[in-house]
Image (cartoon, rainbow, N blue to C red; front, top):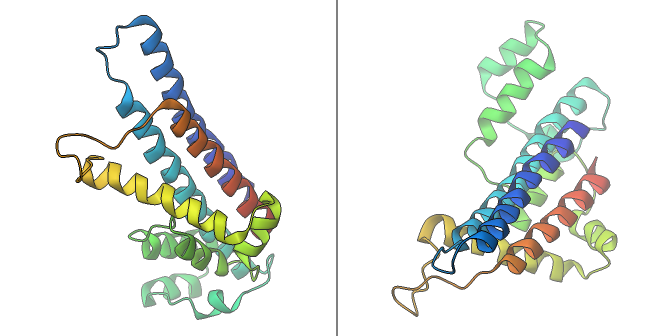
Length: 200
């Protein structure tokens, strides 16, 4: 399971390095060079890193449940698998192969970014009341943590699906700066560390 967190940290570092690149460009170029899309990309990559972490935690955790090294949850027991995966399991293939691939396939079209969807994924591997425990780790009310994450995901969606265009101000994008992108990545990092700690 720790490999999932290590990969998250590598993915988040790549997003942070993009911010460093934006700073370097602003220091050597004129203000005519617009680096705001680098900050937007940081937000997209940061949310992607969190999403990937949750996908991997669910996949690896479910393998651990099947192997008996992690207690099974109700959600795990109700998880539906295709017959071809079950047949592969009965044939003696390793859990990593048949179950890991089945989970990856089933989750491939899902995103675990929104607080409720993220909690659904964690329920597959842990009975923890996720946002209550995460809020304790962050010393913030659970509602505030969930709202802030939801706002980050909404901004990511505006960037990824709407070119970050402000419909109230045609022809202009929503404002962004390096501090906002950095703050977003810092918060996503705290969320990820807390989720990993309480659910792994």
